[in-house]
Image (cartoon, rainbow, N blue to C red; front, side):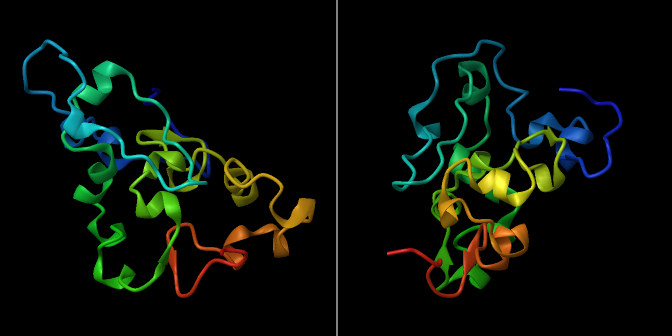
Length: 158
């Protein structure tokens, strides 16, 4: 992971940029990287949701929290349980805490630490052929869909 300058439009997670690895990773415990603790197992996301990238054993065994709870330790306002999200229709990966399905935890050449961009490129990773090959209005998935939460079901949901 590079720590040099970012190109315009790129993003870097603030703790990563500040070399504050211990915000997410346990850097103080024993030097041996034991077996991956079951309590940190990534839950099975709902059907049709993206699977977070596999983390290597060393990384998983050193996370401070379960992967599906890790991001919400700081981003409480984005948690599915946050007051502003109660009663809303939640996007499957967001509901399951699978942030890594769409966001890189360290840095990205895209805005908001997204793993792909523009939006159709990101969304097509899990929703190929959506809109039957026709472009989304204004080429912007978010004109109708929210990546986290919205009032009422997503267009086309059961």
